Length: 115
Image: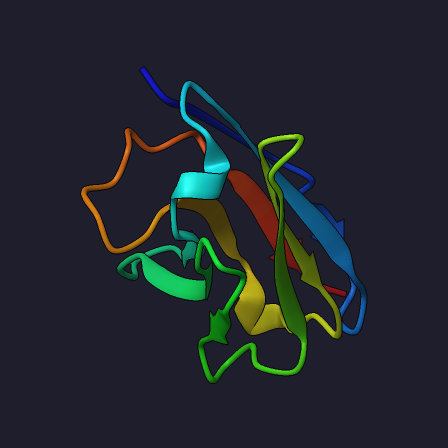
C-alpha cells in the first residue's frame, strides 16, 4: 500500500514563496514519473508539474518560470518549490505518479495566496 503525505502549505502573501514536500512510502520513488497537481475550489484537479524517472521536467504554462519540481530518491520525497506566488495559485496541492494508474490520493496540502 503506497502512502502519499503532502506538507509545506500555508498562507502566503502575493509574491511570496513556499516549498512543498511529498513523502512517499511503500514504493521506490525512483521507478516512477511523478507530478504535482492542484485543485482549486469548484475546479477540476490539474497537473502543475511533472518529473520523469530520468529527471526531465515539464510545467503547466501558468507556473512556468515560477515553480520548480525536484525529487530526492534517497529520501523518497518529491518537492515543489513555488516562487512569485499569485492569488490564482490558491488550491490544495497533491502529489502522485504520472502516466500510470494513480496511487490512492493523499490529503493534500492547502496553499492560500492572499494579502
